[in-house]
Each structure stands twice: as structure tokens, then as C-alpha cells.
Amino acid sequence: MTTDQTQPSIPPTALAFPPTIGVDPGQTWTAAILRIGDHADHGWTLGPVDKFGAIRRDALNEVDNWDDFARYVRRLRDALDELVDYTVRRFGEARVAIEVPGVPIGYQPGSARKFQRLPLRDWVIPRQVAAAVLGAYPEAKVVRPDGYGRRAAGTYPPELRGRRPPSWGVNEARKGERDHERAAYDVAGVAMVMSR
Image (tube, rainbow, N blue to C red; front, top):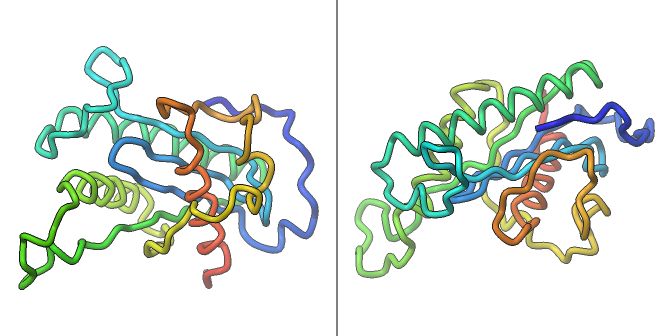
């Protein structure tokens, strides 16, 4: 992740809430967005890589592949640590928030397994990513799922529509999708108004 020092100015009213980094963990892509009020200041979307550093969309399909998962979490932690440091240097503080997926109904005790069609990896990997973020940032705000990132694209700030600002970090999603970034923005919005 690269943070450019030539950032746009932030309206003073945006600083009424703490600068908040929302993290949206996914089975393949995880995004983090620094939100200042209604402004999306900086962000990135990272995916898993193989042992040679090449992006591998399928690297986490096997939930017991701890080597690939450890590599993924290391990359996420490094990028998140850098974003937190940038936020503290620029604004004096940083709040971290993570969406924490719940156990799907079909996997809960007493449920009929035949009703579960969600692949195990689609909730286990995001849950493990959330646990890794909470392990690194125990004060992080926990945000429960609520359809984040699914509002009409026009309701998001310009930084989350169309072209990404050149000063932002990478977007490794295969087709440059922005849905995880919009979800991370929404997660940050929920967390920034939580009590300290």
C-alpha cells in the first residue's frame, strides 16, 4: 500500500467522528477503507497469493490450507498496520472496525444439514480473517453483517464509484470490483458512531 502525501483536504465537519478504518473480510478479497465523516480517504483490496507471490483467486478454496491462509493474513496485517500508521500520523488517532460474519443457519447446532448450500469456505475464511484482525487490534469495533456495500452505487462518495483515486492502495480483485470497498466504507460508518 502506498499513501500519498497530496491528499485532498478534509472538511472540518468530517472530523466530528474518529477516523475509522472499516475492514470487510471476504473468502477471496478483503478490503479496508479509511473513512473520515462521509469521505473515503484511502483504501485497498487484497487477495491471496501463492508461495511465489502471484495472486491466486483459488488459494483459499481449501479451508485447511494453513500455509496459504497464513500468507494471506500476513499481507492483510502488513497493509492494515500501514493504513493505521498513516491514519495516526495524519489525524492523530485511528479506530479499526471489522465485520464479523455469523455462523450460517444451516451450520448451527440442531439445524438440518441438507438446508445448507453455502460452501464452508465462504464463511470460515472471512471469520478467520476477522479473528486475525481482532487478534492484532483487540480494541477494534465488531460490526455484525447487515448487507453492507449493497446500496445503490450513487449513494457512495465518488472515490468508491468509477475510477479509484491514484493515491489509493491496490485493488487486486480480478475485475476491479469495488463491492468489498463499499462494504468496508459502510462498516466504518457503523463503527465511527459507536461509543468509544
